[in-house]
Amino acid sequence: MQDFLKINPNDKVIVALNTLPAGRVVETTDDNGAPLSVTAIEEIPAGHKMALYDIPEGGDVIKYGYRIGNAKEPIKAGAWIHTHNVKTALGELLTYTYEPVEVEEKTTEDVTFQGFMRPDGRAGVRNDIWIMPTVGCVNNIATAIANEAKQYIKGSVEDVFAFDHPYGCSQMGDDQENTREILADLITHPNVGGVLVLGLGCENSNIDVLKGYLGDYDEKRVKFLVCQESDDEKEEALSIIKDMIDYVSTLKREPISVSKLVIGMKCGGSDGLSGITANPLVGRFSDLLVSKGGTTILTEVPEMFGAETILMNRCADKELFDKTVNLINDFKNYFKSHNQTIYENPSPGNKKGGISTLEDKSLGCTQKSGSAKVRGVLKYGEKVSTPGLNLLSAPGNDLVASTALAASGAQIVLFTTGRGTPFASPVPTLKIATNSRLANKKGNWIDFNAGVLVDTETTMEEQGQKLFDQVVRVASGERVCSEINGFHDMAIFKQGVTL
Image: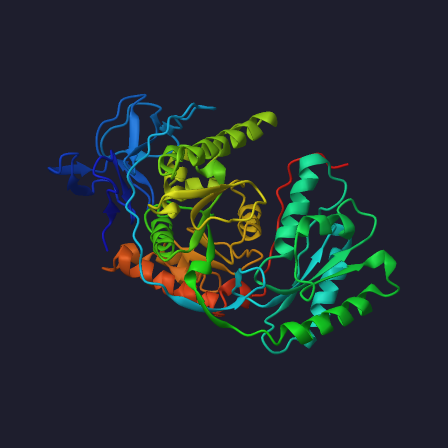
């Protein structure tokens, strides 16, 4: 295994893959490809950066071939570069110019998975029964019903579970609209074999209101119950679910083109290897799925700041470019409207793992987008409709962003992590470790080890195909760790006043 990596020929830093002791001589190349020898003048922790050149105060620190910040003080070649001597170079609202780049897009042979075709033409990768509360007041009832209803599972029905959330009432304006849209998106999600919408009766987002957000829905698969109108809501709900399972259990998996797959892409608990192993690997996967007519969705807008022009210039046309500009600046205005610092990032865990600035984090984060053109830009709660790479408006918070991906139609979420997390989302959440240490330590959390990209002689192409094959298996019914553990989480983006 190599001990360090220079990501881009123009970089002014290398990344330590293992801790480099003071006095270690690093042999690499300069901007022109000529041999370059630099001695570490202090210990460089694994995942962190070492300067290859003297950098003056205010000088650009280059990683991934882009500026990740400016030096706070003069930095000597061989020095550790981190938060103590580098700061963000980002401003606030910016003006952008569309400078489209040529993108080579390939078409590759179709592959099929075993899934469930739904009446609306979408495909499901699970045939679960969901209980969806319209309001947090009935959360405990929903959970109790789900636990008891598991006894009725049969046939192709895979699980019964409820999604707790604290919303649906005491909200105003756009905040309430977000809740209604997300609930409606999940109620009609293709992974749902059947869903019981459980209302209280007096809430703002009651069942009668929510029905107006559902559009055309399959009445065999979507049922409703208002608790205040029932003499025994638990008994009545179990009867409804038992009858629903009788129907849903007869549905069968069938071969479906992977062009019907929609895969969400998210990272969290990132470290210095995120932008080197797992995120580029997901980018490779995205390009492969898109080449077969499939769809991927990239979100967590605040972690695009500093790398947004890379995405903007890959937009398929000027209209999408303008939407991406609004996507970025609208989120910055959201921060400003709450008197919050736009660049309050990276997190403490990110910094410990070697990420120094938001640009550093964003340039790693956006590696998940691969190299395909941007074909769609979605508002929060908007369902995806255009095949190919899409951008989605949602925050960086893991649970909120992953829920947003599911609500937009993702049947599976790929989640890369350098530090590990057990959480799930409403859909199968496949965890990809950036490093082998995490994969070996947390085998009950991690589904795929991208750390082998720096541990072994394997290639990105080989691992990209391996990840693609695993996603096809998951789409065909193979369970991921979070499902085996029984974890299913949902979180809605809270943006407004609570009454």
